[in-house]
Length: 584
Image 1 (spheres, rainbow, N blue to C red):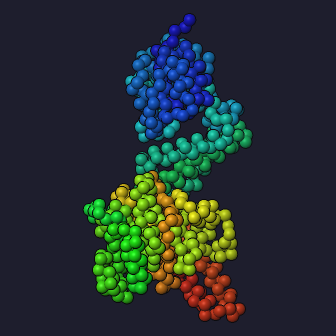
Image 2: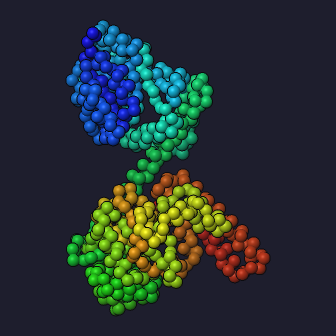
Image 3: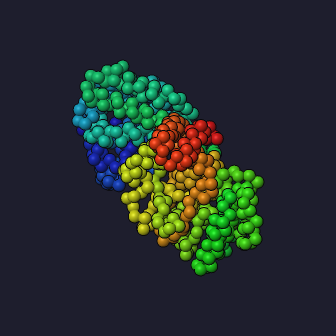
């Protein structure tokens, strides 16, 4: 019987029970030891490997290079052979490996193996798929995987490598969905590596690099010889290249967001305070007074010990004096100028002593024990970072306040002329979460910022509101950061608050329109990148021209001419604004 060679075969696995038996069988009798490095399999992979006598080490997955380098530290034989679970050492390759190691020279430290790739049961001969040389067999201590190459790993070998020609069988993928999913998973790792390396895409990158990838696979490497399958493979890899650069762009914006995040140093925690209520006021004296009255009644009836902080954004209607005279228990922070809603909220948060902060609009009215309900939700569910109530109009109708994060289609439909004539569409129904009952608590992506209960720990982790937003959309970006940090955002309908809606901004319709759409452009820039934000901006500006044409047509027909004139002026002012965020 032929003795095993002084080789340890290393196999990386995660849920590979389907492929692993074939891989293990192919190295039986060829190698002295088998080491399986598993990353949390749940399909019996570990038990299967152990039943064959393989050594199994469980290690959380970070990236492929790290996994392989960690495995190298555990190899006891002079040679190591790295395999994927869906690869097979063919008998002819096993014989060639034996012969090569019997006559190996000292200066030879590794061997290239000719990988033979099968897609959906078919051998792919062109497009660079055969022979697909991989440096998998090398002397321990003479090779190491480059740590900056997170996917499609590269061995740094000290010495000379020879080439073996017998095929290493690779039964890549059995379904199209499996192949596409794996390429996009690789794309995420590739994007991470390129970000770390400092790559920055230009506008031409998004077209040029995918086109280059397609040309290389389909034309230069003659992928066309494999017909439609070659076309599909080249096209999928080109698409994956586009995804890589889009993810790089997204990562760049995430880094910029992290750098621009407003870190808020909160006041020392006071455990005797049930919650801190932060209200930002601007020229809505009667509303804020009514809001404070409802807070006092709610706290009295529920026994809640609330700290109330009113931040005034340079109001000129006597709000500050009225609050100090009628509600001396409320702390007033009078800012010298109107810096916007987000800056006002952050100023209030900095003064807050409570473990839970309730950010409240001045045009709201607390119904019953709504504040206590919000505090209870945060207290009883430590994984909830933000909670919001059911909002109602003054006439008792439910005000939509639950949302999913916006997509490009959302930008083209929400509050545009298209929505005016096509209100009942699937995109906006999904955006407004119409598939969930507004009478039941549930998780959401974000909540309308009229009332948000936020855990102190969340603010310490992700920061305050982004002060690049003057008015509108600041709560969307805040919730985006909070969700990305792993916190839940919950809609709690047992807490009910009346919301007049738009009291401050509604005083100046043109300004409100400009602020709303400029904030939308700013939001898309932060969430999805400048190219998409520019597209949204141009679309919104075009939307104004369409509205001007519609309103002008109705004016010509004599229909409510005063109203039509006002709207034409408003939309023209909005168009002339250009909708360019101040940060651009």
